Image (cartoon, rainbow, N blue to C red):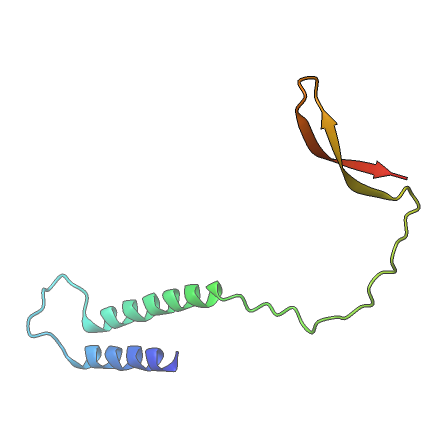
Length: 99
């Protein structure tokens, strides 16, 4: 980041030192161009700085896990059962069985 900033400052200093050979009378001068470049750089730098999220949530907080919850209810499992349809075909299906 420092190299980019230093390069921009050096490029701006070189641009200010080198005056153009011919200028139009109704254009802005080198000082006005430098001021506009400085303002534009500040605007772009502010936009880049605002894009970075400086929020840091802080240190992590460790808590004990909640106690287990036991639910009383029927005990269920799956079984495979054969069924025969009226045409004589045998099908094996999984059936839930609760006790």
